[in-house]
Length: 587
Image 1 (cartoon, rainbow, N blue to C red):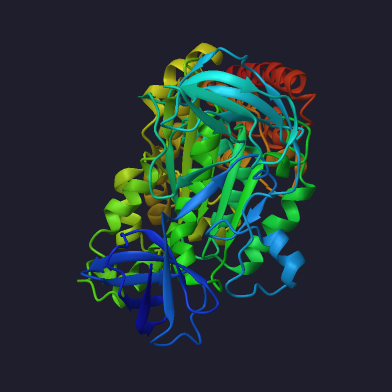
Image 2 (cartoon, helix red, strand yellow):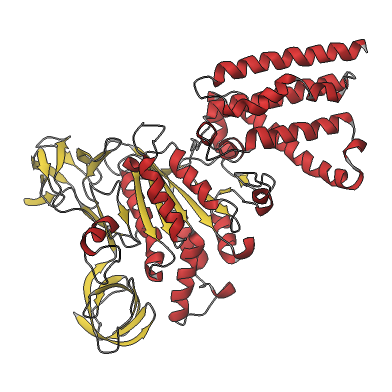
């Protein structure tokens, strides 16, 4: 069915004569068949957000509804793909039209001609339910793509074939109530609808990112949610790149939502060259990139978040651990604000729509650890990490506040730390993780004493902040020796442990065991030095032992040598503190 445009206001188009259309239906607008989505209906009048540039559209142009909601195509071929906000494959479009995307171009998200080797995992006669795995495709050298029975479908396998097929070919036929149901390797799913699962669990395993301040101080669980707010230049994008590169998940979906084009270019240039430390394969083999930069249509920016998390849910349903990294949700919220303003809705705080908080919640609540549909009881996890770019670094603004109410981990970036060249510039005094209690059993089982060391380090950093107030007033010399030791240990924690260089190979990724051993050295130094100070040993002798300098350089010890090196440093430290103590007693 079709209608006529009566109004055009930027990405918003209003059309009459669409009485049979529904909210969220995809429409084709004008003679160029621009893609749009119906936002609301009043009688037969529809307000449509158009995902492409609307220059040249005018009243009287035709609008045709497809009768289906905005959906993504799910199947082999998504990994290593680069899509825009509505899952148009940018690489294929570039081959067709050159560097500039032509308006109205219609290229399917999944390649229709490429043939994939399908290997069945069930036999004729097997009873299947929704979510069961019917076969596998080796999509990349790193990831096996599991072909699932689509939701809402079940039956007995009548025929199933092995061989090379396109995503549209029938690979399996189910029989139910005398009817045949053909299955292909591709399925579609509406982006604004959560994919179903059997059961949700409390996250209890840490997502190991290789970033010391994250894994040790403020860990996130697999299936958890985290926010990275911070002002311009504080390192949000580098932090998210590091999480995408090093996190121990199976699949990464990176959404460049409204950020600068050069940042997305960095991702596109870097990722194909990076080697995944977990598989030894190029990182792109397990990555899906969604590029919707600030110069691309604003409406598609709003859709890109949903496109990304729907793709992530699909891989989660296969039983994989998936991370969605959105950079940044502030730009997504600004797209919501612009569309809300054009719809003449009543504005909320700072002009954002009144439903901003619920939309942010809808995104983050799609994260979690779940038991997937299907009879095999497999589990998958989806971790959602979103950057927030508050204007002027003011986290009291609505997007930051709504995000903080929903996410359980807050990595607060600090411009003062960034200007002091301390990276990652996460402020340890105002960041937090609400997963510590859930993750404690895992840490204590694998690294006994880990949480105790972590809590001791945090209390030392907290005490340092209090002592710095006194130091600023009367100087460090007025402090008691044990308080001066607190400042010395805190400096070790900050400079030797928390600081990390993303551009130095050895330091860019730090294994959890390595983090535990390094923190153990620092906390043990503090403990032994404190006992020596209590026995009257001069602090200067203790802070000048050679082993302390070795601890400072320990984070650059190669990965295959650190265990032996850290053990040796520990032995030297204990011996040198003992020698300094004996000298102190003699004096």
